[in-house]
Amino acid sequence: MDNANPQSPAPTGPSQDAPGLPTIPNGWYGQPPPSQSYLPYHPAPKAPRAPMSGRARLVWALVVLIAIAACVWLFLVGQLFTFMQIGIVFVPLAGLAALAYVGARTPAASIAAYILLFFVGIGVVLNSLTYILFGFVKDWTKFNALLSNPVGVDRSTILDIFAPNTGPGLLWGLLLLFLAALLSAAMLLRPVRKAVSRIMPIDPDNFVHKIALSILTLILLTSFIPLIVLGGTPPLLTLVNGAGNSSLNSALSVGPESLVYQFIWTIPAAFIAAGWPIARTLQAALVRLGFVRPTPTQVIFGLAFGLALAAIAAFVIDPAINWIWQTIGWPTTDSAAFNKLLTNLVTPLGAVLIGVTAGVGEEMAVRGLLQPRIGLIASNLVFTSLHAFQYGLDALLSVFIIGLILGIIRARSNTTTSAIVHGVYDFALVMSSIIFVSQ
Image 1 (tube, rainbow, N blue to C red):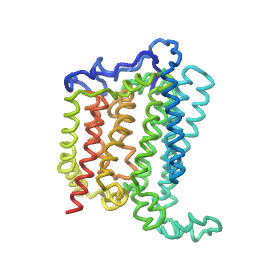
Image 2: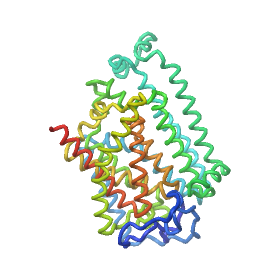
Image 3: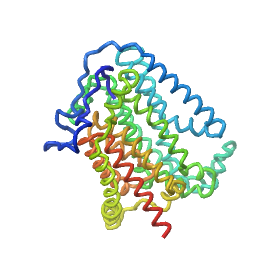
């Protein structure tokens, strides 16, 4: 996320015509060589944007028509509400990015960006607080009744619903959320960003970087807080175990359509966050995100390494982490609850959908958008935090390790290659799970 000359795509590292995976000189991957786009950002001189061509107008008209047709179809099949509900997560973030780009040039838009940042931040904090509250529910039957009829509930009923330590737990959670909000707000101060720029390739004077760093800090910290407050128990798995056969459990179960809708929202949001169409053309945004045409060598590498990585994770990384956790006596992720959460996706179709949506969507958002601007470690922490609602600390460590490997691949090639590896990795894991269950 940064300002850019719309007619001059930012450098993105190795040429897409390179014969293979080029080698990085010795050094930290967060600070790659000058041939890549991970250097501290220096905006190019502004250039007037060329008027929209007739071909571009035609493309935009087709996009609008397709979007309208899709909304009509979703309405007819009764899925429009679900689609829009998933979009609630992405639209504010995309809007914040768009306002940040405009706000870099217009004072009024910068004020609007600050206002939207405030309300998006409130939403992020409330989301985390809600998961904390759910984690303290002890009687899900009464809780479901409370959700269906919240009027006239007395104090004794509330005490029966929640665990005795709910009060202290909520206070602890509120304190941590307050500290997270303070750190997020601190990123708006230039001296803080100047200090951060020593370890991240950001520009402390770039307005887009300022807004992005603030909201990313909040998302990163608040995603881990429910896991901390609940003693290492993932809140989503607590919901799955407690909801039983209720409508809440049905709503929690992830279906193929949910993955597709999330993917549909993720792609345009990532492009907007990369500066399209305000600061970059579509082609320049693709280059900024690292989604370039891979070489045949990179495609073969992605397919082979994705399969190898799945085998390494299943037979080496996960068993080793599990052994360490059990030896120390720490709780591990409830695999039964996690399988229940994804039960509708443990199919060949689900394996394909997970491979495509996670491979392309997550790599575009994390390795393509974030890594060139906040570095390998910070972007991978954000990637790991996005899994903290359904994974325990043991599984999160595995996610972090896999994310590091994907980040190194992106740094040494492009996002397209890391997306192939990620997609094949997820596909192979789901398919192996299907084969294991069938036996």
